[in-house]
Image (tube, rainbow, N blue to C red):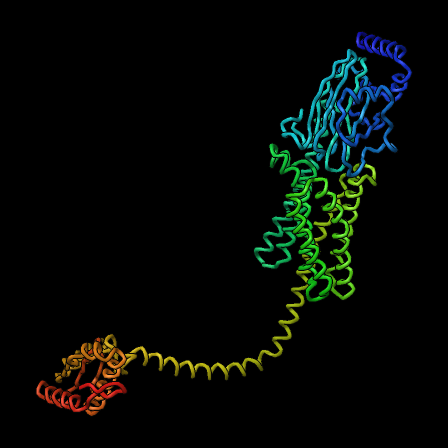
Length: 565
């Protein structure tokens, strides 16, 4: 302990001598030096930072170090590290002196995950400069520690002033909150952050799967669009928090660049569609429904355009459109509430909380509000409360719909008896008509469509029955097979339509001649017919056959185009 104290005193003394040897401008800079004393686990650099804006973004680090020596840097405006959406490069400088002999290495973390390119130049007392780079435009593996925020390990010798020069160029919102952590402090920070994110996304997943079960059970579209809203907004925050770059596409800067505006558009489509369905705008406020549909169309088209437009154009417009989109949902909710839709009360409260959280996040992105815990995580807090309240609103809406259904059922029961008696009479009439239709259908299934005689299938079944009866009763049963001679010549000479007419005429003739014998006449196939004669023996059947042949021969087939014998 004594040796450490003596070393610390010597380091302070050496630092004081170095300060006396500095020129006037450098001596002034020592007033903005961050001194890392023992026990300083976390040091926010904003109070010690100065900045310089470079519009053309062409200067090198050597030029900026010269500008630093010439007082070309200025203090942060009101100590804030947010500058909104601006092109060009921002340079930030902070001088650090490490007085903690137990911590000679610290992690510099930029607590904003969406910067495209961050270059860190560390200049030591002997003049040598160490360069590191990170950001969304580089693979995730370029970071010193696998963490959602860009970070750099920095070696800080005891008692030596170290200049940190940070260049940030990004099409995203310019937010540069720089913090130095000891390894222990960073581990605690990462654990707490992961715990907070885990709780938040755990709530979203629980709400998603709970409503998924309800949607599968009830098939109510409100639950589906609620799940779409939860998934879409969860994706937005996954991208904004840098977790998508860490876990989904760590080697694709292009996807990371496009994911933010596209996910914002997806989430807004889900919000507007959920509001339309939940509030029943098509029935309760047609103009409001049309406006919501137009907003959905805008975000759909802008999401497609964001795949082609640069980030500096796509993201600011998508972010700026979020506030009026959410505000419009609050307006249509208020209107439907005024029109007597009671579930809109919880819905309005939910969107009010979400609108407040979204407003703070958007205003931070544009540099209007300072970056602090409540503003940085306002959108997570607001969205978590909003989704919980929306889940309650869905439950309340379902209860209201169930009550309405019970009322309708009760009224229906009052008219049921009268309706049953009427329907019973109608049903009896319908059954009678159905029986008649079935009878005609059975008859049509037994008949040949061309000749009107029985068909072969029904004849075979009926003849089998007649044959069994004849054997049991010891009675004769005659069977005639009839074939029309030269029928093919008729078809070939006069055509099939004439042949069909001949078949019909022969069939009518046979049915007329055999009616007195109660014969069973059927078309066996083509121009062949078959006749079953009950109680007629061979001689009698032959007489019937001869008479039938004579009748057919005496009745030529006459049609419009020919006369066939």
